[in-house]
Image (cartoon, rainbow, N blue to C red; front, side):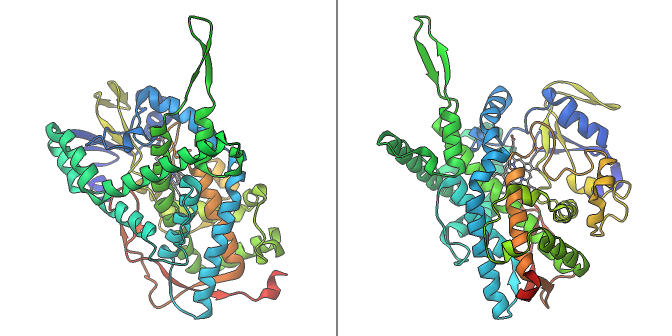
Length: 462
Ligand code: HEM
């Protein structure tokens, strides 16, 4: 896309199969698509094949049903609800610190990409699916490996065939579900989550309080059973379930996918940038000491949600890492529902509009010296004068990332706890320039990110 942009400028188009795409980099036009004219751009591009459960998830739902489901699910990710799952995140992060500590003891190189995948897999499996996995201490854990394989194979030849041969897409959808490992893994998740839902409903009937489960699945179930009371013609009240079981399961599944690789990538890039910029690392450590001090050093849960949001330099470092390496680069796309004028260009209905996040985040007119890591770009004073579309790692507008609070909370707790105890340093295997790949929509460090951790003196924390 860099090459196309150099050749054709900030507005150009291409086809995938029969589907026209236009790439729009002008910030005012991006704002028009994602926010101002959102009513014309509610949907993501239609999928090549209608794969269950994707079509029932927030990612895949379209039009009115997407609006209704998003309205029901959004409160699940409110700050108040996030406090409920804080404990799970803290517990998993303590295991991360223990795992890194073992490597530090033996002075061995650590692939932080693998380590953070273990963390985010455990957190999201426990929070979204109520599934306990020991994938941090056992990096070869079956569940983690299935998830990795799933994402590798998501760029599936069956899906590509469906793009080019739309007439046989229904047959291909069945083939995908039954015959591909992705389809089989998905089915195993569906069975698992349905089992948990049934067992909780059963518990509820025999009097076990539903609030004893602090996870997203429980929040989804509560949201779905927050019934709308309406009256029938005979005057008797009727209860409508707001989400079907299929929708609960589908969304728990999409949180697993959405919450795993994205946050692991974000954390990995943070670790790489922090290790290769010792001045930033020391300033960050000082902030952690000033605000949190003894609390973290002794592995007390970082349960005060507000404390995390007060760490302004941590926020600057995280924001700048997401600018330099946006974990999701090819996903902010919208389909035009009707003919629309975008600046001087006429966009016919059915055209897909793609927002080139990488090119926006590396535009020298918006970000001088764009490949330099400089968290000071996110000082509050500088931030407030910036165009709101210049930094969009989570997309923007009503259809932006639903998990932003969850991702930021998890990443910041992990970085805070890790960096209080350990100094990250490059090792022989650290790449000077990271090799990146985009197998589907996420930006991955192709060879992992290898670093070492050195234990900080305990006295400095107390
Ligand atoms: C650093 C981590 C993450 C990044 C960078 C990220 C990025 C994104 C982006 C770019 C989008 C598309 C937004 C748009 O089209 O405007 C998106 C959508 C979405 N994300 Fe995330 N995400 C992250 C973590 C998470 C987590 C942890 C969850 C759930 C637990 C999640 C759930 C979702 C969902 C459900 C959508 C679809 C929203 C909709 O269509 O209504 N994400 N994310």
